[in-house]
Length: 407
Image 1 (cartoon, rainbow, N blue to C red):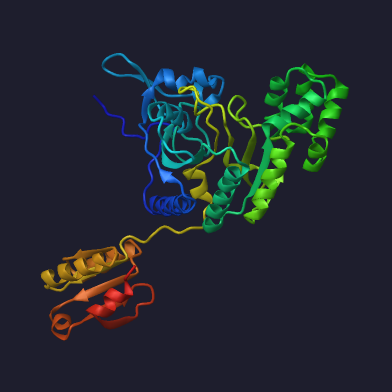
Image 2 (cartoon, rainbow, N blue to C red):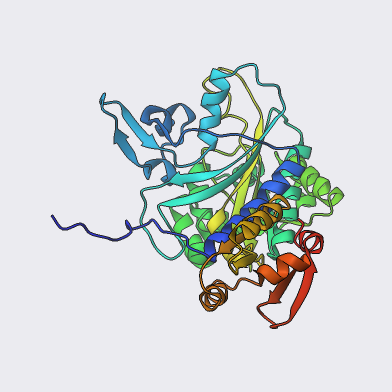
C-alpha cells in the first residue's frame, strides 16, 4: 500500500523561523491577558455533538456551527472537534455553579472547522480568547478593548477598533418601520463584501425604496443623535466610547456592524487593519453562558486568531540556540559551562565535533555567538567568545559570560 506523504488540506506545519515568531507573539498575548487579570482555562478538544450543535443556544444557523468536524467514538457516541471556546463556557458553568463571579478567563488553543480553504483560511487554527463572565458593566467591555489595544501596540500592528450595539441597530431598523429586522441585519452584515449599491438592491426584499433611503440616512448619524432621541442601546454605546477614552483607546462608531446574529446582545466590536481586514472581534453575549444552568449570567469577550496576528506582527522570534559551545577535547568542562549558562536562561548547544563543522552549523542556524573551550581556556579561566556576525573575538571569564547571557 502506497502512503501519501502530504499535509491534509486545510492544515499546516510551522517550522522555524515561523514557529519561533508564533511562539513569541503568543507569549506577548498571554502576558497582556494576565496583566488584565485574566486566568488561564483549558477545555477538551472533543465535545458531545449535541452540545456543539448548540440548539439550546440557538446558534445552529451560524457557519462555524454548521462547519464543525463530527466523529464517533468506539461506543458510537456522536462527538466533534471544538470549533470555538465560548460555547464550552455554558457547559463549565453548568458543571461548576460555584465559580466566583466576575470570572475573567483566557484560553489559547486549537479549534477546528470543516470549511472551504483558501488564502489565510485553514481548518485548524489557534484561537486566543479573553472573556469576562458575570460583569454587566460597560467597564468590562472597555477592559477587553484596552487589553487588545495594548497587545497590538506591543506587536507593532496598526489597527482601528470599530464598535456598535445590537440593540441600537435593531432600534434603527424599527424606526424605519421595516418588519423583518433579522433579514435586514443579515444583508447589512455583507456590506464589506458586496458594497453599498448591492446592499441597497438586496434590501428591496424587505423594504421599499423610501425606507431604504431613510435607513441609510439614519446610519449616517453620530451616536449623540441616537442618544438624544432615546434609541435603545444608544446610551450603552455612548458609555463604551467614553469608557474607552479613559483607557486612552480611540474607537470608531460603525452602525453597519452586525457580527453573530443570534449570539450578541449589546455592544459589539471589531478590530480592523487598513479598514478592511478583520483581525479580532467580540462583544457582549448575555444570553449564552447561563443557558444550561437556568441562570442569567452577563458575559463579554474578544477573540482573535494567532495566525493572522502573527503574520502582521513586527515581533521577531526568539533565537534558539543563542550560542554554541565548541569542545576542543574538553567535553566535561563544556557540559559544566552549558549547565551554568542554561541556569541563567541562555539557550545553548554543546558541539563535540570538528571546529569547522561547528562553525558551519552555527552559520546555518544564524547563531550569534560561539564559545571555544580548550585546554588553554580552562587553564587561564577565560573562554574565547566569537561574534558570528562581526567576526570579533574576545576572552571572557566564566562570570562575565554568565552575566552577558543572563536573562
